Image (cartoon, rainbow, N blue to C red; front, top):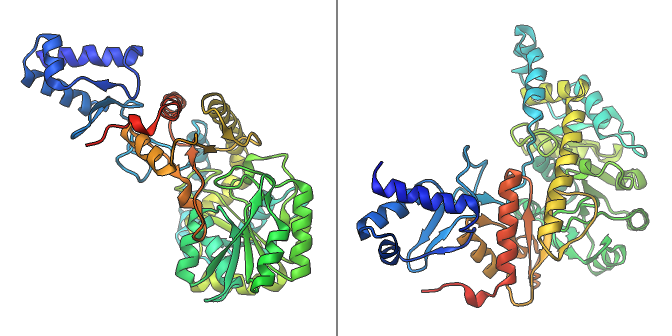
Length: 445
C-alpha cells in the first residue's frame, strides 16, 4: 500500500475512534510531515486523500479541520450542495416509507389506470381525490367538505394561491414577525406588502393584529398556529379562540398553514374549526411523505372557494395528475397514516437528541423537526453560521425569517430532519462546542 494511503488510514482511524473530534484542526502539512517522518509532498497527498474521503475540510489561510460527519453515501437532497451536514432543509424521510410507497404504486402500473393518471386534471382534482383529502385533513373538530377541497402542485403553491385570492397587488398581508421565508418570496412576487405582527411564547398576539389593522386595513392574515416554523411553538386553545374572535370582528380572512401539524396528533383544534367562514387551511404531502410527492391542499370556505380556485388556475399552480392519483391511493390504503406514525416517532427521537445536546434550545413542546436556538450573548447569528460552515454544518440564521426592517434575534434555526441520527448527533455536538467557545477563537486571515 502506498505510504500516503497508510498514513491517511491511520488519521481516519483516529477520527473514527474519537481521538480526533469534529472541528479539530490538523497541524500544518510541514509539521505533520515532521511528526510522521514523511516527506512534505507525502503529507500533502495524505491531506488530499482525507479530503477526498470527506473526513476533513481545508481552507486557505485557516488550516485543515476534521468534518462533523463522513461524506454521505448519497447526494444531498438539495442545496446547499457544499454542506456535509445540512441542518437548513427539512425533508424527513424514514426507512419504512420506501417499501410502503412502492407497494401503493402497483395499482398505477396497470395500463388503464396509468393512461388516465398521465392525463390532465384541474384544481378541483377528482371525486376520489377530494374524498381522500377531506378524510386526511379531518380532525375531531374539523370535517372538511370534500366538495370544497382544492389541489395545488405543492403546499407552497397552495399558500400562493390563497394569498393571491385574498390580497390584491398593493395590499397588506399580516404575518408573524418571524415567518416562513417562502411567504416573503411569494408576497414579493405578488406585489403584496407583509406586515409583521408581534408574537409571544403562545404565538401571534390577537391584540397586535387588531392594532395593525387599525393602522391600515389588512387584506388577510397568514399564520402557523401549530408547530410554527421557525419557532416550533404551538398556539394554545385559548389563544386560538381569541384570534378567531378578532378575525370575526375585523371581517378578516386567514390562511392557516398546517403543513407541520401532522406531527402534533393531540394538538388544539385548527383555527379553521373556530373561524370556519374566515379561514383557508392549507396543507401538503411533502413533509408527511417526501418532497418528491408534491401535492398541496386548500379548503376555502364557500364564499372564498371561487376566488381561490381561480387564483390557483391563473397562477398555473394546479396539481399533476400522476401525483394526485398516487396520493389518493396512499391516503386510501393507509400508507400515509403508517408513514405519519413513523415520522412522529422519528421526530420525537430527533427532538430529544436536540434537547439533550443543544442547551437552551427552545421551546420544549410537541416534537418537531427543527429547533429555534437562542445563542449565547457573545455570538451574532451570522458569525455563528459562518463558524458552523467551517465545520461542514449548515444552519439558518434568524434573519432569514424576519419580516420588515427590525433587528434579527441572536438565534438560528437548526433543522433536524435530513441527516442520519448518528450524523445529526455529531453535528449537534459540534454546534454545542462552537457555542461554548467565542467568536474570537475563529481563525481569520
